[in-house]
Image 1 (tube, rainbow, N blue to C red):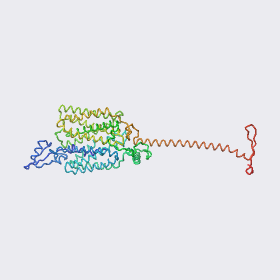
Image 2 (cartoon, rainbow, N blue to C red):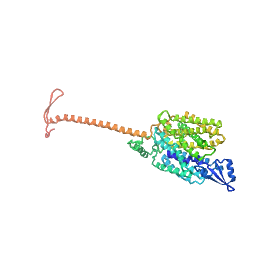
Image 3 (tube, rainbow, N blue to C red):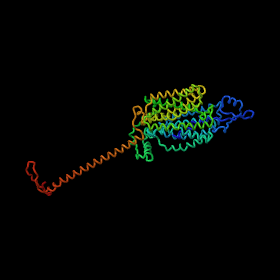
Image 4 (tube, rainbow, N blue to C red):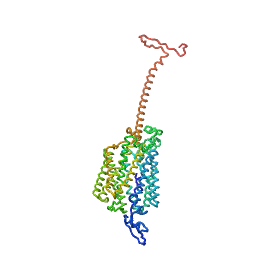
Length: 568
């Protein structure tokens, strides 16, 4: 999860670090040099167009040499960073949607590892970009693979762990540490090309280690690949992990209900809505993730000058690096708190977590809306603090809740499709936030916060009405289980119980058979002793005359014959 988030440096770079504007040296027609300080507003752009014959960025004026400085993305090209963000969001949408379907049909690990390698390749390609549109093409491909691995890796980790510890693996997909590492790399490299080189140097060794990962045992069983599932489960049961001392065979897994490959349908996004229960849950999840995307977009377009409150329509480089670092610091405390509450209090369920996180966001955006009505500037300290608090909850508690509920409410056969479709709506929310809400900041700032507030309220009401509690529930594997109830077939815990019960039954049956065999031997031995005692006097009297009592009280004389008598 941490390495997946390390690749977020590719995805979030253009939003802050890549948009730092330096000072400019303008060479006029008479040969003199004029220094233009950022930001380059309309008046400065008019001066540049009419007087400058050559324009160059002053590298020493900033601590980080960005894309804006490298390709002069100002004046007529000032919208190019936003356009690159939109292109990335479209790529992420496509990658999430396609990756979800591929993960359910071909396996989670295959596209997870392949996507990791492709992300590194496209990120290195971006380093060699010579213009903003070649960079945008590389980042578009990078976003496709990022959306793919985000979905498949999340599904894989959710299926590896049981319900008790699943929230921990969920928290590993948070971004705080990644943002702090990104800020450190930016502070040390000072240049956007060196930034991408060292970013990939950090993530490449970890990505190669992912080749050691196993495929999800749940998906293998659900797709009727029992032999491969046994290999994975036997490794999980090995003494280096669980010391279970159990060896599974395909016959052990035959007892688990699964789809017949010959009659298996082609699962797709339609199956997320094919029942009433799934329809309500899918609507809830899509709405939640769209709201998440809207709230996330407000953070980036509002806080571009976090440190020292020096937002003057541009970012200083010191503020941008500190902004990225604090963006991670502000969020690092929330996941441990959520995990602690989940372990400590059983009643702190998924529904309470959903309602609580949305309530906090609702209050924050209500306060932001009130500040906009009072004509408070967007760069005010109060606006900054409220947006930070809302983002802390949105990016951590709210996202973790969406991921956790998705894992438990959708069966294995469509779980990756569910994650892919839901994350696709996250990118739709980002697209709406960037293209619609951000322009409102300069024209109608009230609507930039009122629209997210409306969606937060709608999501909160729908969560109270529609969302069921899922804490402590086992994962389902087949679509029929989502229609008619839940079967206790969690892997590998149920398989461990099955094997342990099978082994216990074998011992019990063996002892019972031993006792029965011992009892039969004793009876047979006693019978032989009785027959020996009864037959001994009869054999000695065969050649002698003996008197036997008659049933009528008289005596019967028996005359024995010798073996060589002619008459018998």
